[in-house]
Length: 155
Image (cartoon, rainbow, N blue to C red):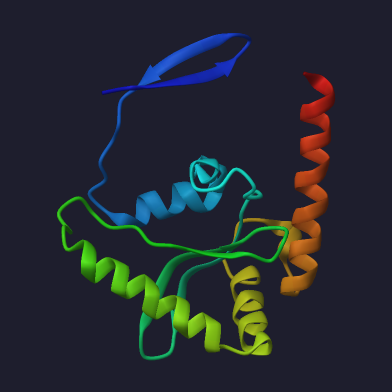
């Protein structure tokens, strides 16, 4: 099976699905291009995501592969599993446990963890250095809304 992808200038290309031997490579691709997650298939009202953590450590429960937020403050937990990991119940339980841990976390703790990510080498967006979570969401809002306006007027 292949996927039809629009490249630009009315050019289309069929690409083949790819499996990954290591989760880290896929994490890196999605971290740098979160727009490839087809959120509109879940809900057409989803806004573009901003990654606010990679290997986001939660006390005593593990690490979230990618933690993201949209401009409305909706937090998304993104977990990657290799094809050989077929126990879907265990994966769902893991995500629910992560969500419960985030839910119980104070804003100050979340903000501190996010700032640590922004100021680390794992975050490759220079504009996020030294930003708080609120400042980052505001920056993301301004960036994505400008892109939407440009896209809207260029059609």
